[in-house]
View 1 (cartoon, rainbow, N blue to C red):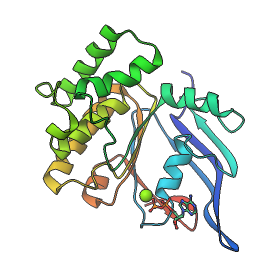
View 2 (view 1 turned 135 degrees about the horizontal axis):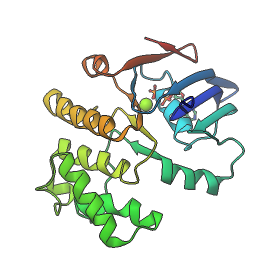
View 3 (view 1 turned 120 degrees about the vertical axis):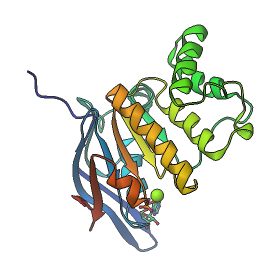
View 4 (view 1 turned 180 degrees about the horizontal axis):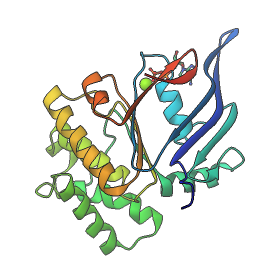
Length: 228
Ligand code: ADP
Ligand code: MG
């Protein structure tokens, strides 16, 4: 059998921000991998660099040094257009706030990334319907975000993130705004989705109970990723 390829591999990733006269060293040579079908919890105090790490992994920010592999593909030498294309095809991102388009229905919000990729309308809405039904939103297809509860909005955001069947799902405190029971339900649907699709997931969370249910827990300590 071939050696499996990680969904995400960071090698010696460094990220610093200029701050007045000095620099903030946030990531100091991060090495880490997320494997297909694996859910990894990223648990670290506020300000320690979780979002920075996710933005680098999601090709939203370019590290100052190191390499970010999405599947087998190194990305540091890619131009912005190439990185955007790769992000659209291979990476789904879920934020703490859903960022759904308010004028569009749940189904349209999930269909949209597929249309941007070039799928025809019928295939995109069929996939959107299937995904939303899988996430328990079969009865909410034509609701707009404002007509959905917080947990439902986040589940639509998750469906949208995986609409193009990405290799990697990155989530930045995706249940941070939800009450514990709703957070639990959203997380359970997320887990079911990852298990069904074999994508790799890296999820930043403050919720230790949820983190305990993921496959592995990591943290950021002195700018490095270490097991928790
Ligand atoms: P977390 O998500 O763990 O709360 P962040 O990755 O958002 O942490 O931020 C880590 C540190 O980097 C914080 O001290 C933050 O103020 C700083 N930081 C983040 N983004 C920038 C930026 N664009 N410019 C300057 N400093 C930043
Ligand atoms: Mg953050």
